[in-house]
View (cartoon, helix red, strand yellow):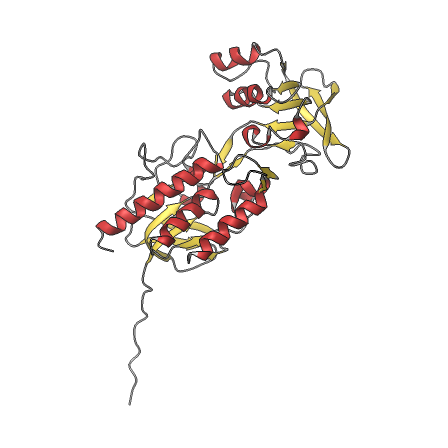
Length: 328
C-alpha cells in the first residue's frame, strides 16, 4: 500500500519572544515567566559588539543598582539577571535575531542564518544602545581602568576622586557629564574637535561658569597612557598646528553619543531620526500590534540599568494584558 505523506506542520507560535538580554530584557523575562507565558529570549551572540548582557558587561563596578550595598561587577550582575530569568523558566538562546517581519500575524523573527522564522504572538524588543567611542591608542588597554563611556555609571569610582579627568565631546551630553564629574575630579578637561561647542546655550553657560572645567578646543585625544594597571596620562593633539601636550589624567569619558541597536529591524518599526524606537508616551507600545520596546533602544535620555529594568517590567505587563485580550 502507498503511504500518504503528511504535509509539514507549522510550529505553534511562542507567546512571547524577547530580543535582547540586558536589564530590560531580563526584567521582561522574569515578569512574563512568572505569569506563565513561557518566554523565549534571544540573548544575542556579540550583538551590538558586546557580550550577552549588554552594556553592563563592559562596566567593572556597578554601585548604583539597588540591592548591592557593596557594589557588584557588571559581569556578576548580568549573570544574576540571567540566572533569575532561567530559574522561572525562560528559554534563553545564544543567538542573534538578524531580521523581523511584523506585518504578519503571527509575528516573525529570524535568527542569524535561519531559513525559517520563529513565530510569536508578541515580541519585546530590548536590544539596547551602544556607546560611541574613538579608536584612540590605549583605549582598549585602559577600558574600565580609567576609560569609560558613562560618567553617571563610573564617575564616582575612587580612582577619579581628586584627580584630573577628561571628557571627549561638545554636545549637551558632554556638558552634562563634565559638570557631573566636577563633583569628584580635581579638574575636568573638555576636549572638542571644533572651535565652538554644539551644546545648547544654557548647557554651555553652566559648564563655562564651573571653575573646575577647562575647554580644549580644536583638539583631539591622541593617546591614553598609564602604568599598566590604571590610566595616568592623556596626550592631546592640537588640530590647528599639530602640536601635542601630555596631561596628568586619571580618566577619559567618551560623551559623543550612542547608537541604538535597531538596524536589524529594517524599518519594521517606527524610529526617530537617531534610530531609537518610538513608543507611545508612558508605555512601551510601538506602532505595530503585539510589539513592545523597552530599555535603551527606546530611551535616548536616561540610559541607566535601573530605568531599563523599569521599562522591561512595563513591557511584560503590557504583553500580559495584550495576550489576555487575545484570549490567551
